[in-house]
Amino acid sequence: MQKYLLFLFCSSLMCSQTIYEMYPDKQTAYIGGNVQFYKDFHHILKDKNMEPCADKNETLHFRLVVYPDKSIKYVKSEDPIAASYKCTSELSKQVVKHMKGWNPAEVNGEKVAAATTFLIIPNELFGDLPAGYDPINDLQMATYEGGIQQFRKKVFQGIDIRGYNFKAPVRMEATFYIEIDGTMSNIELAESSGIKVFDDMLITSLSKIKNKWKPGTIHGIPVRYKFRLPIAFAN
Image (cartoon, rainbow, N blue to C red; front, side, top):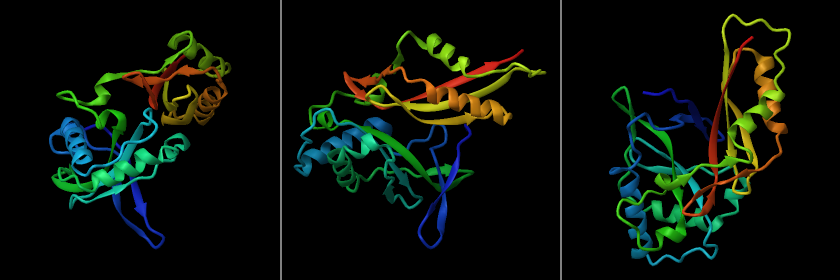
């Protein structure tokens, strides 16, 4: 099982229970996996005669928590761009209430609450879905102008290792999102070097890079893309 974080879902009075930030490896949040999720989503849209969104390019990383009793709770996105897609958000919340295939995560043989995310593209889900439809399989990754090596070069320009003597290579990893307009956001440290000054330099260096990326796409539609950047250096 890969490492994954824990967080607490808290009300104004108390923290109610521990929630895993992601599902353990090889476990799925929906019986039948993503393919069955989208198939059921599509059928509910049709059966309930729901209306499509006016903006055909709306997409949403719809995040929710699946509880041990198979109940679900929507997790509000902190992304301002996603928050503007109110049609897709409301549509998704209405549809998932009718879905019956929720599959709680298990840890050490016990069912637990865990978060999961589905990419919702209403314009495609209202149409005729091809067999085995799962948009994440067709994701084209975001790319940096000049290539990833040029990006790494810019990152290293902001990291000064002069005056330090390392017994072993220093490793760290940052994560960030490439928004649909090609800008970077939500820069965070996923793996610390163990040396705060280097951790801070990496975050600062990334924050200062203003060159835009070409956003990730699915079927030609720009989508928010999460990028992982491992860094290693030595004397």
